[in-house]
Length: 152
Image 1 (tube, rainbow, N blue to C red):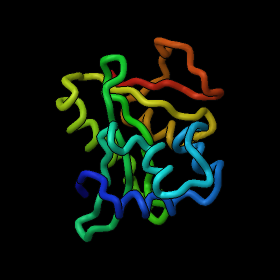
Image 2 (spheres, rainbow, N blue to C red; image 1 turned 90 degrees about the vertical axis):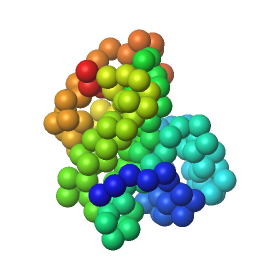
Image 3 (cartoon, rainbow, N blue to C red; image 1 turned 180 degrees about the horizontal axis):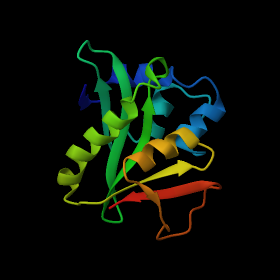
């Protein structure tokens, strides 16, 4: 498995992973338009601002997607998702590990952060196994039931 810059084709496939507004909001939060078009999806994804990556298998299967950017001096991970066809196989761990491997030196930081909804128990378990723990956010979180997690 390896990371590559997310392509337009990856974004088009990524759009197919969300079948309803609830799935999309769990992944991207409440400020992502639904229903979406390619143009609105790319705009809401901040594809031209955040570093956006596709995790591919050796065979070229699109396994996962994730982004990172600098937030409060941390490598902040965003919009992490595994292709529904490949969930439950430990791919999220590879995705996160690889994003942090390139993101931390790229952003010149040793610590990481992310947001997750409290009802996303599987994601929280994965993040906890990777050393993330719930922390107090430096500002007020305006999204209900949203947790801030850090890995020092």
